[in-house]
Length: 145
Image 1 (cartoon, rainbow, N blue to C red):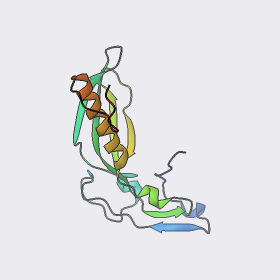
Image 2: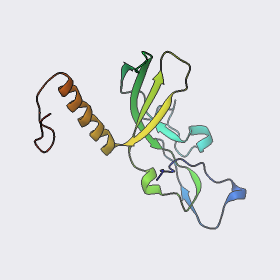
Image 3: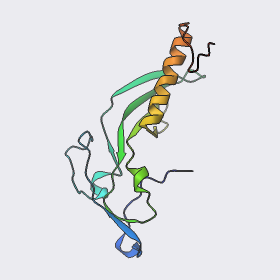
Image 4: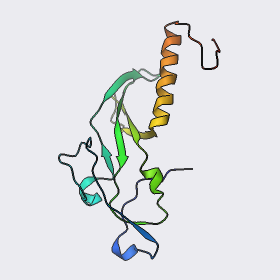
């Protein structure tokens, strides 16, 4: 099921009876030029995103080079929203993974994952790196490859 986290606030003409008010606060690590407490979404953007914390380079099976960058992200909510917006999901602390094809003009893609998913990804990558370097470590549960 898709997480419909980022929603623009309802326009005054669209407001139904069952709505909820959200008061936006820009995160301290947000890469906006200045913190925009209670700024309309149109002035802030739908996400608080940090600067890049790290990245890696690689290539696809055809030799085209790609980069993947990592940074913090969290939805920015301010205004009147439908009561259907699940605020608990929107307030999860997310990690943003940005992928870009260096060798073409294909638009970058963003993937937002929770901190729990980021930890699973990190553990998987560490295991695969150890396996590629032939470092014999057991999988969780004591399984060896």
